[in-house]
Length: 97
Image (cartoon, rainbow, N blue to C red; front, side):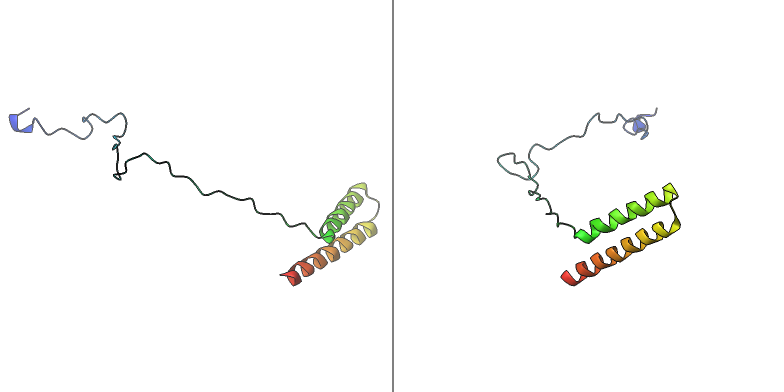
């Protein structure tokens, strides 16, 4: 290498730092402080309306009737009852807002 190119090296040939260099006190404080996150409080769960549970129960009954092949009448009846209960629960929830 010529004498003037001694200080110039390829980017790939340079030695990389094994770890980042950290400043001892970057913000000028006297004591090291640890930043705390705010306390998170759990969101209280609102109890579901009984119609929601009823709708789920009747959907389960409709599924069992369909799988057991006991008749489409019972499947349609249980599904209709479940849908009516779900619509009622939604209407009550919207009115309560």
